[in-house]
Image (cartoon, rainbow over all chains, first blue to last red; front, top):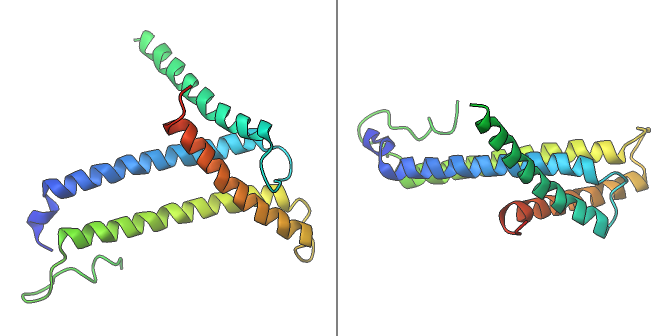
Length: 78
Length: 89
């Protein structure tokens, strides 16, 4: 493999994009797993009830709210 | 031995892998890794929900539960994804 192509800006950009994609993927996966456990308490049906759907959506939003609080709290401690 | 080494150039005259090929190969491997991880999670969740008392074979209700579970988990992933990246608070 041509060594200069390993250092190319193009490859660097590609790798940093893929890194970001991987982080996004991990966040969605973790959150889906946690929110599934919190919200889907009975045997899975042929569709979600509206309360299950709202729970899942709320779960993601509240997680983000919490994340913000934690960051602010952490920063105020420095 | 990973699949990269089968493409590496060991001597003069052998074909070199272009950046494009490398990118494609990385993308394929990443997609496969993501899919594997997802499948592992689905297996875990659906085993928990649907196989509460393992019998000597899968019952019809266990099988249908598993089917529904897989669909619902995929749907849940979409709901979470959209909540994180499009819907406003």
